[in-house]
Length: 415
Image 1: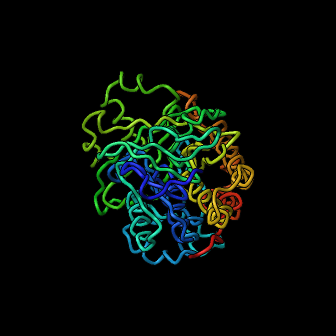
Image 2: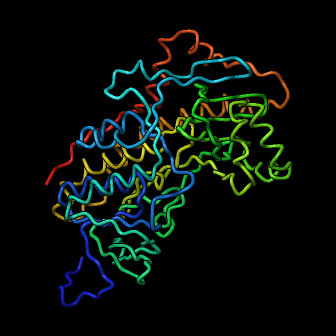
């Protein structure tokens, strides 16, 4: 990278050792870890705040363990949240236990439900102690800066005009619709998903309690999360059927919802139009190649996950921890080589592939079959019958959901 003296710099140029694009879980966690290591890092978040639809709200034990290793867990758990240990479902009218996290041998055997904006704001506030970390809100990456074949930073659009962030290393954490990935021309391997999800919330009375997590009926499936003063609902539909659902009308959808989950009957009036129902288009994909010279992609930008298990947030955090472990020391001396950057893919590709493979098994053997049944009777799949019948088996799906494959631990340096 060519040397530019302070006198030569434009007011529209900002230099950094590392530029992270995207202020989601991967970007904010990685920014925190690199700032903690004393590395000059800029995080670009294109929105003015973290309030978004479709933000995953599940913080799993693997992420709680990372927060504990960083000394942040006490402050985090003081934020309002709900805890989930046992995951029960109704499958064709038969109650089954899907997973029991209390069987895990981990310090935090529960999933914390917390609005993701609270999680991200928490990381941003915690990172303010590091002078080397800067989080720029309302800064949207629109293009890559290149010097020959090497990515040398990012051009960003801000309320004050265009800014060039010149960086030794650019790390894309800008999600499944990554602008950086598109500008880099990296090919995506699509794996596919048989469903999409309608996402909405329903008011909850304080005395309303129900432990059911999933409901599956012939041709229908729904997930409900107790969020304290409301129910967060995910109504699963066959891929590409959103227009057909809208054509049936809102009332037909709400009638199906209440029929499946009578506990929602009181608050269902909160859903007044399809404007209150958000479509989440489900995708599973991954990049065969995560790097170019001066560029690395992690999180959903490198591998979009299905909502099955709610593991996307936690895979992204694991990517961030692995990236800091492998690259922070090298970044102190300059930009790692592409071979050194590729160590992140080599470390994380196996957990990603295994997790996606398990999601595909669930999609193809449970979800897809249920959605295609129509009015035909629905039987509990053998694997769910076994898990429900033998409680000791409930720790297996619990471990997959809560801990994941080869979890990461914090080994990155501290300034």
